[in-house]
Length: 118
Image 1 (cartoon, rainbow, N blue to C red):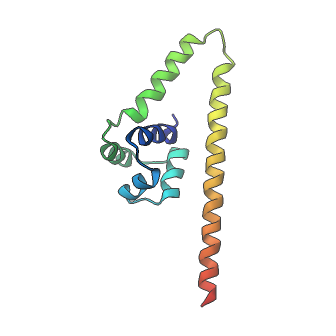
Image 2 (tube, rainbow, N blue to C red; image 1 turned 135 degrees about the vertical axis):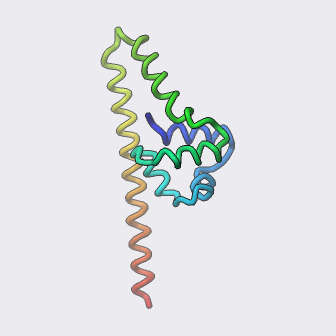
Image 3 (cartoon, rainbow, N blue to C red; image 1 turned 90 degrees about the vertical axis):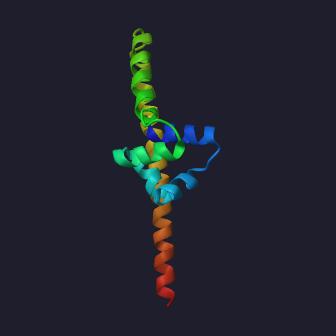
């Protein structure tokens, strides 16, 4: 289940930026992004996000599980393809997480530099 991918698709459909969603939920951009990538977001936050995006909360869960089952049945002759896709998704998530963490480090360094000026 890749929540970030699902949220991005819904936001694109609604023509809203990710920063809008983060602000509406009272999260920082990076905090929301990290929680979606790592899957550490709480269920109540998913419900709030669904309400803001005007979609049912099951959109964040149903698509991944149904797609996974259907693809497993259809690709029974290709047992390697599915793990490769999962690994590609995991690699993509790790790259996004890495980029977000690097941004946080830059922000932290800038804050420290500003505090040291005084």
